[in-house]
Length: 470
Image (tube, rainbow, N blue to C red; front, side):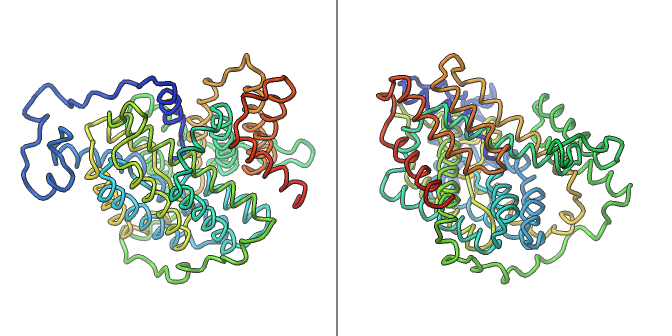
């Protein structure tokens, strides 16, 4: 998921020299289950004994992580379907990139971190870049591709970690929360809870409609189950509301499994030259910047939960993990899906003992197997996934509690970043206004020394975009 609240907090603690307490690696009181005695290929490949884990524990952890994030195969096709992409094809590409990306992370970086298309960026792509701006999905994918290339270059030249450490916490929280509100807005719209109004922009929808009621039901199923620490809460919500949709005739049963549809029509269809325009420069930069925060923060957060972070705030195979993450984003755009990121849901697998890449490999294999159950995706109505979108919004906006609201030079930019994303219907504009307002507040209050090169350069680039393009 794109939730980077915990990772950002962990990262800040590390930068201040405070190491957050790792989770207890011991998964039960029976020492015979704590240390792995396997001497097979898996134990050697993933160094299970060195990490104090077993094949069985890693399998359970992988299944746990998969169940918490499998909702993406239902949600992503519906969101990208709004961009005139074939939902059945998007379902396959989502499974492919989540499967291959997670397996690559497990094998090359040996970390219990799963990858999949990012929530938030998919909505930004579908509803803003394609929907509001009128850009074709092929050109939009080109923007995602170039943003991913930029992320890869930042990783290659070791600038990525420097950037994440030099952008203020208030702006990072503002970006996270703003995307959360943006996603929640899409969820409320998909349920019909809010509808357009020419006088007031939005208004309450028809709450007596069964679609609205089922969307609300789905949201509360997720929140109640999640509060009871049930890992598959989102999946259960989607299944229950979809079954209700069958009763009302909104969807129809068409089988359980089938051969995956042909995806040759989307592979390599990205419009690379069409995306290289001044109009899309800000979009490309936004894709790169958001993915930078999301994936880097999540990698730090998950490895910190697993007790893998050292005193310098780094984790094993850090560079390999960053390379896998950035290359997966490039590959995702090439085969026709939105930006790929590390998922914070990986912490659910860590919580039950996952410590190595075998956990991620299990997740990847499960995503590849899901490809053969595409008819089930066609049975999911929009209101069935809307609850998940609203819930993601709840989780992402919770990070606002960590903003220093007494310091207006920090709180005002965070507030502007957060509210301007849904109010302008543009994540790019929210980021731009946030960075520029941060510089204005610091300079005008005489605290210009709080600024660093990274913030000033980003703000200047956005200012140039507004002057030259807008």
